[in-house]
Image (tube, rainbow, N blue to C red; front, top):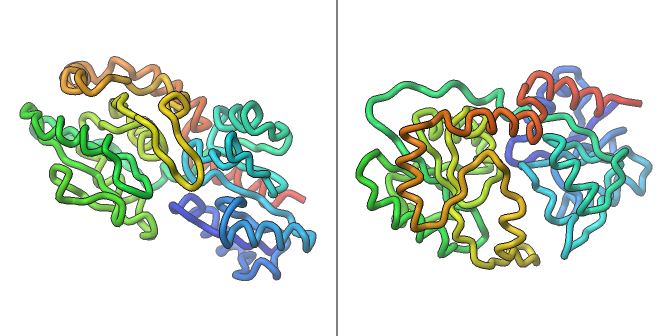
Length: 300
């Protein structure tokens, strides 16, 4: 079997390496039996999905970030072209079935291999609070508001994990900058996380899932207004509907108080973080995730 893959956010690194090791990877989808995509709704990936399906190829799409399914749900309602959609966990599958009306038999839970590039939390002197601004296609007032609040916090070292090309380093405290197209992007995210005692963000997503997997308390600041991205308007209600039980949600005026509480009692949401790993991340075992991915990709 010949397999062609397209990768983004490094979510298919381990799968690609194993397929390459087996001698089954091809560069052109035209030469493949199975095509694995990181999305099938826009740009070149959409063109490949349509072309491959039309040519009788088997097409799979893999969830490229936690709950990265907004193209399929209202108001965009883009159709899923792929034969199967591979998800990080049962919660994404539930959303796809309930909100996008994709048949359950077309969704396979495999987990993600991203966690193979993480390590343990490290011991360090003092307390450290990491802010991960929301990444977007334009500057967000919400990010600046949280940054300004955290700059006033003097009980811990406050630093920021920024995305190159999306965040202005001058606007955030002690920035660490990662590049999403770098082959070791997730490893760089770990470098930011390994010394964090608390992580602060706006909403959840892939970076929050990394923190939760590492059992680091995560605070989501409830200050979302209404913003547009790729043709879709994200209202406050819809944005907040994707939040889980594993993070502490607080309004901006209570952020510093919440940071105090999480630094004093990091174990408070430990059990809910474990539950999140089971329900959102299929147990969080990267080796098992790779085995499940390979089983789906190589299925007849």
